[in-house]
Image 1 (cartoon, rainbow, N blue to C red):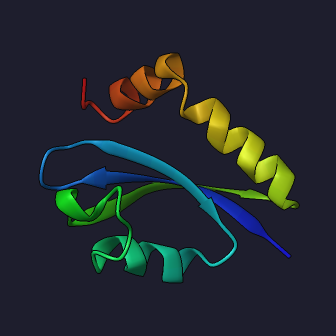
Image 2 (image 1 turned 90 degrees about the vertical axis):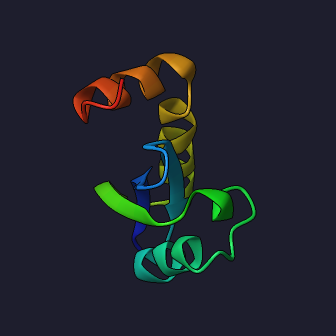
Length: 82
């Protein structure tokens, strides 16, 4: 099974969200449908980047890495959001 780490950007306030899933399209639909508590106030979201992994543990490890303060700042600069 494939697992994904995805990076979203809020069109409302340009915030970045990093998550992981094995059902990418369904998960993004949940974010944009207001079904994810932590992101529903910042809809709509657009997909900026997807990274694929062979295991859930690899994906979760990478997701946690990207959620660190320093990495989030790097992502913001990469997408001209800083």
